Image 1: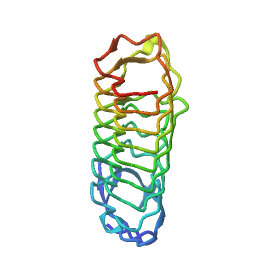
Image 2: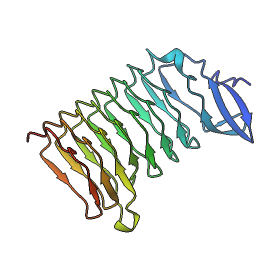
Image 3: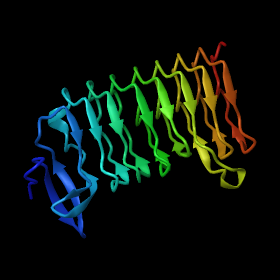
Length: 220
């Protein structure tokens, strides 16, 4: 099916719309929550591939719970992303190499940021999260060289399942301050390695495992 307003091609699966191709050439996009009266629940990996060099901003529909791998990889003009309000997972390389992206706000529902999801977003300065406390996997924000502050959401020791995996913030050379809530239990090898400007990190009481070289070459 094709939506007459947006030009989006989509399938209906189990009562939900799955976007397979976005045909509009607009550089600022608001993806609707419904297509053809069906709630949008998924977006295929290469649905926006024709906009790789032109897309500047996108607001994703609230019903999408998973951002697929490579969905916006190397979209080098992408400046602004509004993640779905109910997003639970950002898969591997989803926003890797988005060199114009400056800020990301993580929704409260977010549980997992997968490998290299935001790797090499070299203009990314701020990660905002009011209540989100996700598992952050390998190299998720590696080489985000403009990143200055990480303030993750609140949590409790009784909910201490949070992980910052190996190399998650490796090479974030502008990073100065990190605030972790009391839900993180593990910080992996080189998680903050080569963060040469790091001045302050608040480690939570819930922390059970601080792996070797977690803060290697943090000169400050």
